[in-house]
Length: 50
Image (tube, rainbow, N blue to C red; front, side, top):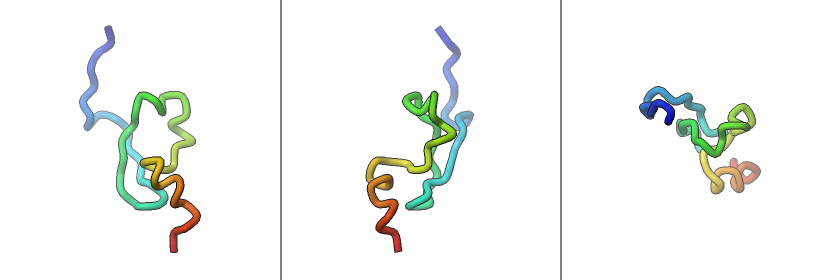
């Protein structure tokens, strides 16, 4: 088993839509460089921002 990491040790990004910070998730392991949005909701709202 691998070593557990603290949430504070994980990389973070800022969401392109809502501007809130979000942290790395296991499901984004292979595509972390391409992730721009914190949630599916923000991804759907990406074009409707004013």
